[in-house]
Length: 291
Image (cartoon, rainbow, N blue to C red):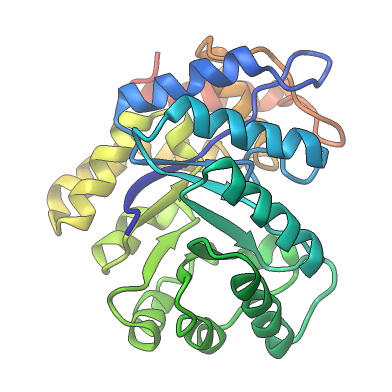
């Protein structure tokens, strides 16, 4: 089971919006050096919605090659078209990804049965460990715990990224899916409590900026060390909040650029962080001891 601090990696870009492979290489080494437990390539934070299929697959290939087995790589391969998700998942498997992360179909607003059939079809089509991704705030689609429980019976559906921030779902999903099914939070602000309740880790935005501290906090929480986990999380709380002052990944890309790890590049329709929010993000970085 992949566990711990799993960073939803930004996709570095040049000022003109083109993917910056050199900075991507630098970012991967930075995270391995800082103790990040695993990486997600081309998830929401990686701007999957605006990368072309060629770019999408190239970023996954580069991250897998650069990591070279040192930590697991999870590829974002979800789509609102089942056939497209199958295609991306096959290509991620061919690239050597350890697992795939598949978001619930957005915009279509499928039924719970439609969600079940969508993920079941992908799992049967591609033999790679698959992690469900529920983020109704972005997709207008909430996959209920009962549906996750049905899907957990499929052997290569191995976990879920639950990004509702509703902590009562930890126990619900655990009861329905058992201890061998991985539960990851996608909500940084509640990640400490989520892991103290028995979660297996966080697929984190904050980890892009303070990877060592996030790793230590998640590790402490998973080990049941509540005092230490909450103490570390207190240093991160302002950053958890500041990185969502505008739509993710706008603030986090600004922060990573401030750290000198990438250029000031983002792709339309997203724009660079507004001037009025920059002091708040900078102050939050200082609280987390980010240079």
